[in-house]
Image (cartoon, rainbow, N blue to C red):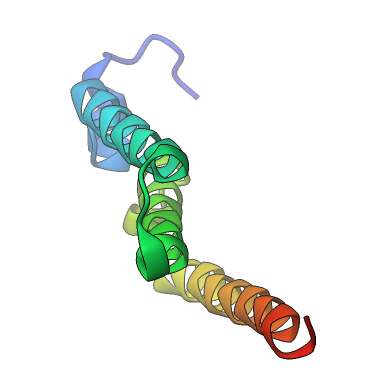
Length: 102
């Protein structure tokens, strides 16, 4: 492995420059700010769906860019997204039990 490679080699190897990663991080920080704001702003019935949508967006961004799944084999993406769907389904089922039995 050549450790003296040019800084551009990371972008060509993984498809995103350092500035791209900074932009993604700023977007994730903004979404986190919106998630925190749901505590202070009354969303009514949209509270839980808004949090779930923001959670899914952040998950997709993190696994796509920071875990490089966007540039990897599609089997790995399929495994992560299947796990996401399963986790959200189990979470919603658990929340539904509080509604039905609470």
